[in-house]
Amino acid sequence: MPLQFTVSTVIKAPAKKIYDAWLDSKEHARMTGGTARVNAEEGAEFEAWDGYIRGKNLILEPSKRIVQAWRTTEFSAEEPDSQIDVTFEKVAGGTKVTIHHTKLPPHGKTYKGGWVENYFDPMKKYFEG
Image 1 (cartoon, helix red, strand yellow):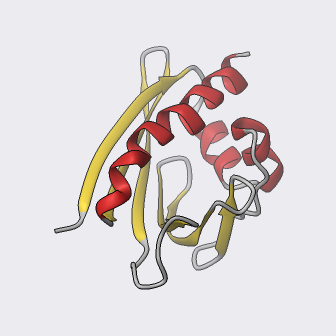
Image 2 (spheres, rainbow, N blue to C red; image 1 turned 45 degrees about the vertical axis):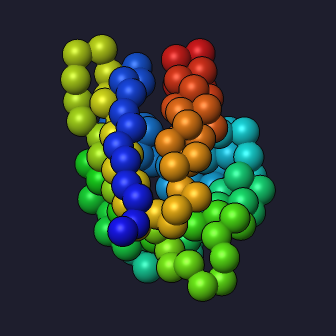
C-alpha cells in the first residue's frame, strides 16, 4: 500500500502571496533556495530544487489549493508519480500551509522531513524576513 503523510506550518504571510510564489519560477527559487521552472497553469509540467523534483499541476485553486503529480530523481522509472495537495488557510498570525503527500513509494517516508527542512523552514525565513 502506498505511503502518505501530512505536514503543516503557519507562515506569517497572506495565502495569496505564498500561493503566487509557489507557482512563479523566480519566487519559488527565492523562497526555497533551489532553481525552479514552474507556472500557474493547470496541466503544466514543473521542476524544482535544481531538477530534483518534477511533476505536473493537476488542480489550481488560486490562494487556496495546489494539487500536483510529484516525483524526485530517487523514484525508479517503474514507480508512478506521487501526489501533493497543498492547502492555504487563513489563521491568526498568517497562513496555515498544509501538505498532504500521497501515493508514495516505500522509500517516500524520507520526504516528510524534506518538506520541513527544504520548504517550510526556508519559506518562513523568506516570508518572515
